Length: 299
Image (tube, rainbow, N blue to C red; front, side, top):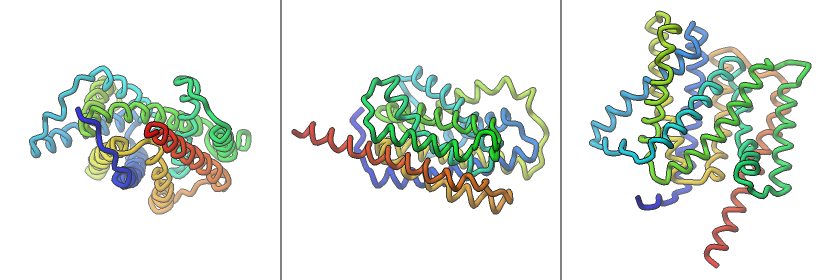
């Protein structure tokens, strides 16, 4: 397959739309859970609901060939990591105010730096280590161990979410070189559905039409957001597009206020600038490094 042409402005637009879609998905997750749907059932329907949507689209547009792959093992690995990330994401959404869960998810770039140092043996300069220190200082301000304005379990699950998203982002960037966004999302949904199917007899409960509408909305919005997220990493590097993720804080704060009458504790607004600043520093350093590497290649 020919290398994918990098289109940074398209990548930024896709990521911005993905941030809105994911914020809407988390709002629906919290909403249906409050109406009695368990976490396991939410994850099952989120995955199972995506499959017919993708297949119908591919059949209607005669693009079923996109599902052919020579990297089934990579899809399976990505799906396993993605499922853990989804459970952590949805768990944090259920346990915490939406805005707090979102901010803890912003620790992804911090974990990305740590993974680069440990797994890839990459040299990490003082700027990026400073960003990691700032970011986790922000997390401590938000969680305030001992004072407990934020549920400790929720804080841990939120941090786990940030870590798993960092792992998945690296996987998606690699897979985007050979796989289309719809292919990645289809195989993720298929493997996830199969994995969660045995839990259905133990977790399913009858639902009202309104709850079923919320579950259907989860499948629709979640699938669209996942395609947009994957596409953004296909057309632009992680270091460029990740800055758009911060827009999700606006949407989750609005959803929390308008739908759940729930605002984050005051400590959140003190810790948030530290976490966001840390992510922006890492993004800036990645941009500088990428530019320097391109200059070396040209020279």
